[in-house]
Amino acid sequence: DFRGNVIVNYLRVVEEIAPPYFILENVRGMLSTPLNAVPAEYEGEYGSMTSIPGSIVYFLWNELKKMGYELSFTLFNSANYGVPQVRERVIIFGSKKGRIPLPSPTHSETGKETGKKWVTISEAFEGLGKQDQFIQLTERMKRFVGMLKEGENWTDLPKELQKEAMGKSFELNGGKTGFYRRLAFNRPSPTLLTSPVMNATLLAHPTELRSLSIQEYARIQQFPDDWKLQGKLTDIFKQIGNAVPTGLGYVA
Image (tube, rainbow, N blue to C red):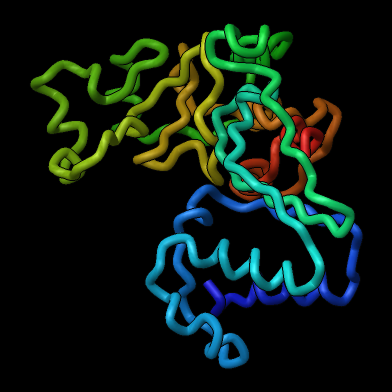
């Protein structure tokens, strides 16, 4: 969205510094997002593209090409690079010294393609003791999550309770698999968000009646145990959830 000027400012900084290489990371929706509000200086060239899906990528490609950059980019799944989390992010690599080849996955779901399976949260949590830094589930969440086993969600509740549990959301389209969701020890985590206790994207512990803890969040993002995180509990979750997993940063 041009109105926030983040993209325009990114281009300005790249143009001013003129680095030989740059890396830009963003959410997967970037690949399908149309330009929104186009500033006056770009209206002539891009004004007709405001409703075309993916036109934001075309805009970036075109403007960076004018600066002498070749781009390579793809949608990365962190789990394919040894991160215990299924987290999809677009990473764009720019170079003035020839196109940068994209890194090949090192892990896969079954391990057949790469020789290494996805890293699970069981492996990520190894050695952690009792956890006490977490946000309490609401009583409603406790009631329904308490009926579920690891890896289950609202669809695994007794049929007669599903509509009561979901309320108005029961009628919505889509999979809605994040409602009353318990993680599974033998899988990577879903994408960590800014809070583990949002209704539609609950991140509940596989076996304990609670949300994921701060330290579990940090392990999933591969932060070292001795990192000190400052602020209120909710602020710390936000800091960790908004970060790039260190494993994916290393690959980039």
